[in-house]
Length: 57
Image 1 (cartoon, rainbow, N blue to C red):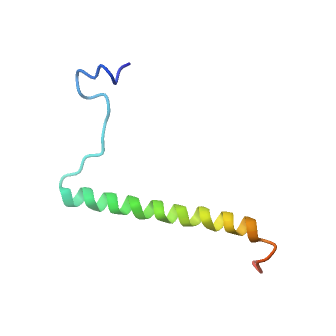
Image 2: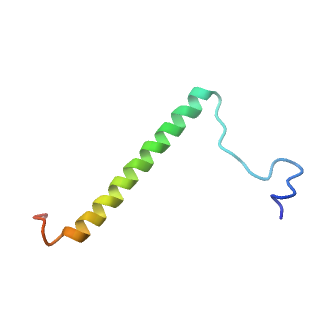
């Protein structure tokens, strides 16, 4: 209910940047961190499904 009646305009705190270039840099870093997390998750699933076929130590 509070966000619907956000009269003061300060209910949510967003991540603001000093410049557009700084915002782009932060977004790009965040995107690549997510890509890395996806690779880690995919690697775990692959190892789990194929552990009997792989020669891993």
